[in-house]
Length: 77
Image (cartoon, rainbow, N blue to C red; front, side, top):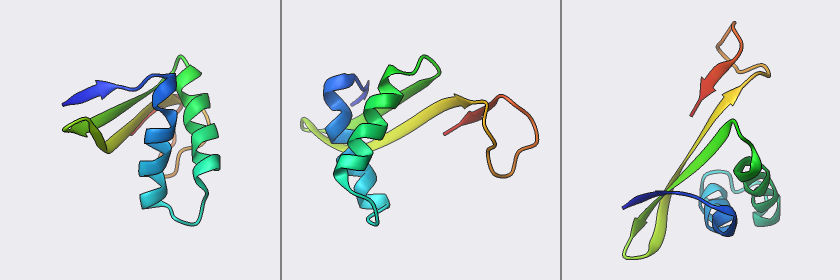
């Protein structure tokens, strides 16, 4: 099942992000996910298997520089 994350899901998303980028901390990612979940131009989706988060997708409309693009805004996944 896939669901849109809410504020209470920030830690679950952070824990998954840490698996991809282990040179960070869960606290850093929790703060980042909390900010993204408050952003009107961002959304996080969590994939669940038997009530356990097993994957995530971070989607944003970004106006800052995004590697490989030359326009703004740009969709970011």
